[in-house]
Length: 64
Image (tube, rainbow, N blue to C red; front, side):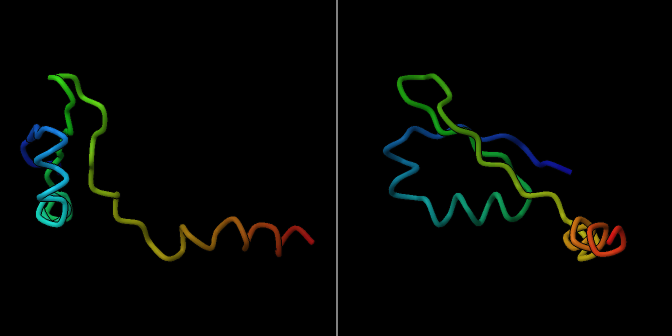
């Protein structure tokens, strides 16, 4: 579940980057803007199971 979206200017993002990352880790979405236009969105990475990470390798091994 994504929390509220926050917009910050590039200058603020540069000086507050660690705090913005902490917000994103907590589930928030942050939009970084330049002259009022969004140039990048920081969003949390969806949680993944370890089995999803190794599945492509497992499929190759089984096929051989």
